Structure formats: C-alpha cells, structure tokens
Length: 138
Image (cartoon, rainbow, N blue to C red):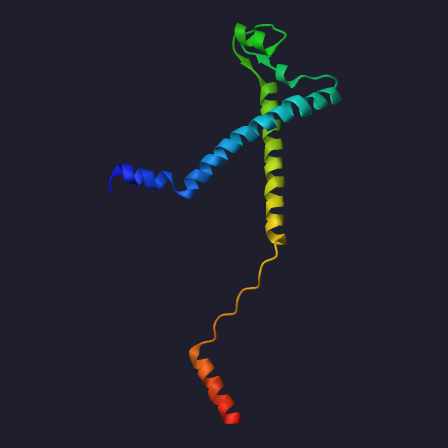
C-alpha cells in the first residue's frame, strides 16, 4: 500500500474527522468562555472586591515603575500574576462548564428508553427435547 493511500485512509476515518470538528468547536467555545470571563465575570468580581483589575497585577523584575502592565512590559521584564489569575479562572470556568455538559449528556443517555434485549435463541437440542416431552404427554 502506498503512503498516499495509507494517508488517505487515515485522514478520512471517522475518528479523525470527529477530532477535527472537536478542535474547531473547542476553539470557538474557548473564545466564548474568554468573553464570558473577561466581559461578564471578571467585572463583577472586580466590583465585589472594590474595583480590582486583575489584568494589571504585576511585579516589576527590572526595577521599573509603571501604572499598567503594558507600560511595565515595555520597560522590562515583569511577573504578570494578575494575567495568570485571569487565565486560571478561565480554565476553572471552562472545566466546570464541560463537566456540566458531560454530566447532562450522560443523563440524557440514561433517560433514553431502550428496548429490552432480545432473548437468546433456544438451542436446537432443547427445542428437540421439548418436542419429545410434548409428544410423550399426548
């Protein structure tokens, strides 16, 4: 089998296509979660904690003094722990949302009524013995 035909067989398998769709949807879902955290949740958290802006929490490593993270990065190295907190919160929210989605999917699978399994066919020797028994009863 040539390399091209092997690659074609691999690329058109259902699992590869499912993975590709999952990656694309995951990328779009990541943008939604980033917006949810950055535009909805973080402003509320900031308001609850007295107007804190986590994105501008940093420790200058080059001795620079700046009011914003962007200015500090231009002046030298910084430890941007506020950005890390934001990304960590994004991850936790994303993990929770995925957990809820998987939990719901599992619940829907269980709720779906399934037909009872068909009984296994009776072995031929048992059928024959039953016929003999029935004929002896007559």
